[in-house]
Amino acid sequence: PSMEFDADEQILVHQYEGKLRKAKDKRDHAKLLVEQKEANASMKFDADKKIPVHQYEEQIRSVKEKLDRAKLLLEQKEANPSMEFDADETILVHQYKESLRKEKEKRDCTMLLIQQKEANPSMEFDADETILVHQYKEKKRKEKEKSDCAMLLIQQKEANPSMEFDA
Image (cartoon, rainbow, N blue to C red; front, side):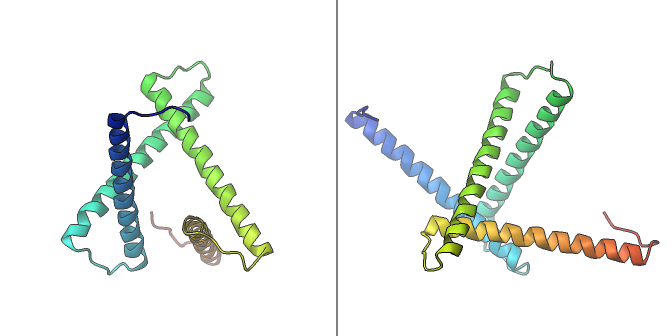
């Protein structure tokens, strides 16, 4: 923390931070567009919006593939403790564990915010907290919808045992 940057280093750091901020803004905008599209399936994107959305969806797909691969590696390691990871696999597994840790931390923080708000209804959230709580509640709502749908399917199957499920 006490390290000082010279003028050239300060410029480099400033440029780097600017690029990170712009990339995050683009990603956040694309994510918002995807969420709007999910909420309104008939929504059409302008040509200039399709590119960031496609890039975002591609990024999500790539991350999901990496996480699935890391999860598989950990399951294989659990089944075969003497298994060794190569350098890339070690990095992948480390990133996966770190993402799980961050997700748990985010969930715990959100739960704490919700509990504080319940204890103090006049409490105001800042923008980041509002987004966190909204995302958490939306995730819980979707999980409940899936659960309700599954229960309904089970009840229908019990009432009509010859009923077939689609994929």
